Image 1 (cartoon, rainbow, N blue to C red):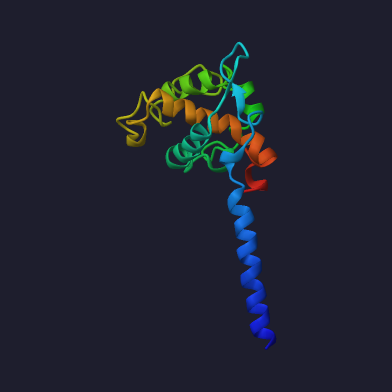
Image 2 (cartoon, rainbow, N blue to C red):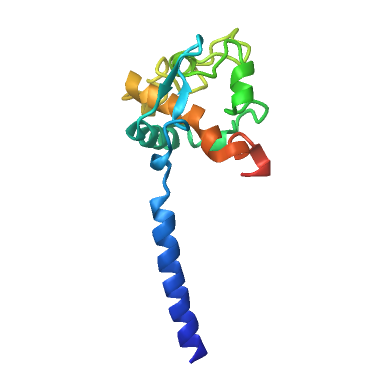
Length: 163
C-alpha cells in the first residue's frame, strides 16, 4: 500500500514539476537580458526570441563539439567568457567582431590566420557545417555566445569546474 502511494505521489510531483520547468525556457528572457553589444562603438541590439533559439541551435550543432559550456577544448586557457573575449586582439566581445572572427579566424593576439584549423566561412571546404551559414546565422550564433554568460553566469567559460 505504501508503495502504491509513493508511486502515485512521485508521478504527481513529477507532473507538476515538469509543467513548471517546461514553461521556463531561454526564449522567455526579458528584453534587458537579450540586449547585447552590436559593435565596437558600444551600440546595442536586442535579440529576438527566434534569434536566441536559432543561435543556441547553431552553436550546439556547429561549435558545441569544441566549445561546450563556453570553454575551448583545444586550448583551455582561452574561453568564450566575456573577459577572454574582451582581452583578445582585436576585441571579440561584440556581435560584429565575432561575426568577423567566424569569417576569418585569427590567433588570440590577432597576428596569424587560423582558418585551416578553426571552422570558419573562409575554410568552409574543410568544415562543411559552415557552408550554409548566412550572415544572419552568424549574428545569431554570435548573439548566443554573448548572451550565454548572462543566462548561465559563471558556468559559461568556467571550464573543468563545471563541465
